[in-house]
Amino acid sequence: MAVSKCEDAFRIPYNMLILTGIWPKENSDITFRIRTLSSWFFALSLCINMLIELLHDIDNFTKLSETLYIMVTYMGFIAKLLVFSYREKEFLNIINFLKDPIFASYSEELDHYMKKTIRQLVCLASIYRACTLLLIFGYIIYPILDNKPLPFPLPYDLGKYTIMMYVLQIIGESFSAVNNISLDLICISLLGIVTAQLDILAETIIRSNQDDSLLGDTQILNEVNNSTIGKLKQCVKHHIGIIRSGLC
Image 1 (tube, helix red, strand yellow):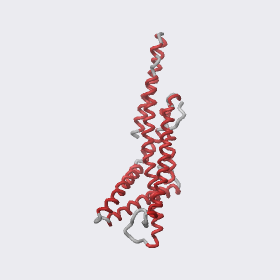
Image 2 (cartoon, helix red, strand yellow):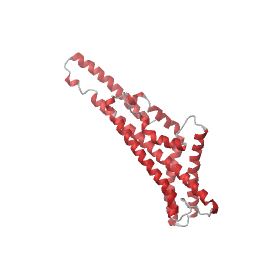
Image 3 (cartoon, one colour):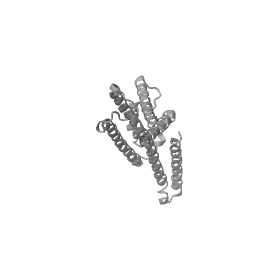
Image 4 (cartoon, one colour):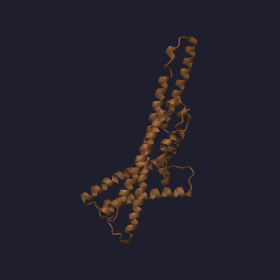
């Protein structure tokens, strides 16, 4: 039996989304719910912040184009977050379905496909995580270097509340950046797992009947053919499982 587990590919985005409270849980505690509400609060707060700036800059084309450029990108993240939250049950069904034994029913010598894919996905997720930290650090220091009061501009003088708004915007950007990167990594991980499973399936089909031509005894050949049919049936089940993993 195979030693690699499909869920290993999701380890880093899972930890990141657990941290922000976005990973779907059937029975979550109060702490997790607070983190979930915080993610949504900061995501929507930044969106409202940009909308206020957009309305203020409606007559200034240069500033308006800058605000729109950032806002359109951010609205894409909001759309991903909404869809992910709305379809969280279907997502959990996919994760649970990937634990089906059919995805581990191949020969151990073919496990190198899964090992390679998981290793690449974990490496990619680690790079993205490092980039996220650099992005957050950049948002922290760039207003100071550029002599701006806030990372995201507001058309109002907040006075003594400027520092508070600065901190809130940084926290909001941190939550949003982690969630955005993690949602992308989940999609990449699913595609990687499906690709690896298809490679394993193709290799299994190729090997299923490769030694039949060396057999001369009819009875032995018939037994091998029956064994091959059994392997092909297993391949069909494997293929159906791969298709279902993309349709759950």
